[in-house]
Image (tube, rainbow, N blue to C red; front, side, top):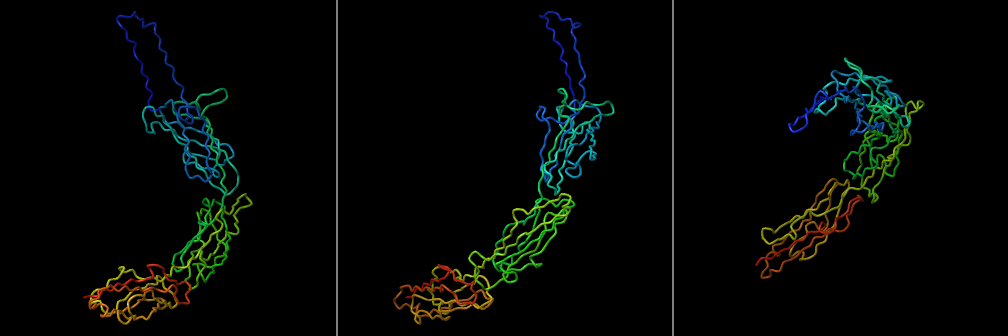
Length: 428
């Protein structure tokens, strides 16, 4: 305790009251015995009993305090017992410790707070992971002694018969079995996207000392390796080691191969499966299991090779003699094809040879690797010289619903993305 303040109030004597003989008054002050104990929560005597997963990374701080106050640093000793083993199931982050126990210094005026705050010290306990399926392990920490340069302190917060309160603290470490699995269950990529997909396997916690894991994996179709996809370090069937301390390893990096084949609507799949696991020192109880993500599905879908028109004002107004001549209407193939692609179109409205001439003749082509082409329409001056007739001439250029190519992935857009609207307004 930072300070212990005892305030003794004097007795006031009122002139109107009966005289009081102070010699007959006795005030007795008894020293409060000093003691050291584990902290009790909320002012009530609640035994410390913690449950911690062996994979927990947070330190469990167990508070040791001296509520009665002290004038110099106190050395507190304690012992470890139970099924939990120091250095295997747990370690400490404070104090000087061995497998059987240790000691820690409770320093005077080392903690912050006001006059109502006890001086205390935290004994830090951290769980350690292993690969042994060994159930719950229990650690019991028992305070043994506490003393400083002036005296020895009692251990525990009072007693009830044979029970000494707050003398012991219990930590239970629950077992977590080691498993290994893929870091993801699936990836969907567009053909020719150039995206790299990492194929990783991971443990549910870092591989413990002496427990290196070897994973065996295999790949099946129908997507074909070297045809639909490839990898940086083939082949994709084999073994890989997760060394001690590993949080995961990269098997390979996958990427697609562009082709001209029309895949299934849902795409083509390559399926990677973890088929077996082995672990070092299995004779000593180390075990490993395949996790729930034991299969990774790599799905390849066709890229969007939909031929479509370049957006223009709708409709495109032609009402100036300066617009006489060839007008280009852009058409796009959003991604390259290794084959020549041809698409036809139809023109409705107006009179060919009077209002316009179809320069490209109803068909346009995209050479291999080309992504743009044009429908060319020559507007004739006879369309713009109205000679008294100013009725607009509406012309629609419509792409055919299908394209001609050995690239089966190529299609044609629908609706407004497949047409041009032109309005020729004759001049007086």
